Length: 431
View 1: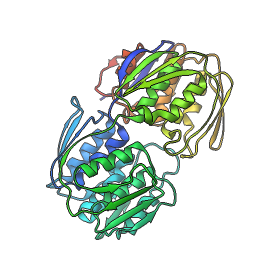
View 2: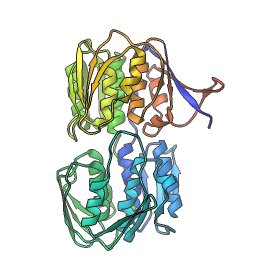
View 3: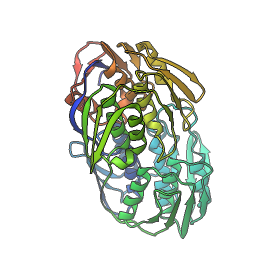
View 4: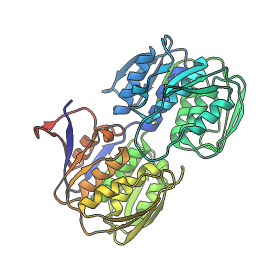
């Protein structure tokens, strides 16, 4: 596919209804978890995003039979005839969540060789807590030419994470569910996709209790069967669309979401003067007053998600007053603010704190998406801005959002892909 850019004609109010796709973070854990089974699995409500397509490549490389139907958002996985336990570096580097192959392969076979994970550059993102958990379960770990080699017969253990880690909690849970004996994980992360991954594993025969709390208890089983499972809606896509509605001073109804997952964001939008209401699986967003500046601090769930900090800070560029944004999770997650200064936004960054002074308007400009959620923030900025915004490196946004372009256009936005060389409009299935 030729290189393309996103072109956004800003200044339009988003109005109407749209739906929320299946959860990216859940899907990227549940699909590798299917390798623990000894019968085929059917996973439904998977988003049609680039990271899922990378997982399909990896699973097929391992020898699994994969039938991916993006138009139906479902995937059947038959892991019974794997031919290798090795995930080469060129595949693992395409996504951050490739590290879940470590826990899945180690738990099933007692051996895994996986290249270091890739993904967005958000500063230091070590996997030491993952490896600590694997060692406690009995795995011997070494490095071999840029690859991580894990092997050993796993036995249950008591494991306390030194810090709250979403990926580490899921990864060690994957390995422990087929270890011999009981495992207790403490200081666990509580994110919704941890609960959903545990629910999938329990559906196919695992014995996991406590997911969603800081203590997870796992009784290892010798065998996991197959089964079908539907992943939960995407918390971060829900939030991105809520923020986009507020940013354009719109009136938008989101269907197929889980309002309780959005309480931290809802509280901040209400504080800004945005009206947010919910009922069952529906969230409505509309602006009743001008945006007010706020203080925002990212925290582990149920606190404000770091993945929504960047889209939210785009909204804050036009709030009345000066907002303070504190990023407690990652140490390099303000690169999008550098790009938005080209649009007339005002901000000062001091380490993990950004001070954002609201301005009356933004103007369109050529921008470069620094990472997945930073790219989404630039899309929101482009929707707010007067004139034309061009976003380069949009492939990084397609890693995590299904049909975002189509959803925004259906709500009244104008977002299109253009071939960088020819200027022709490009049509594609994702983003």
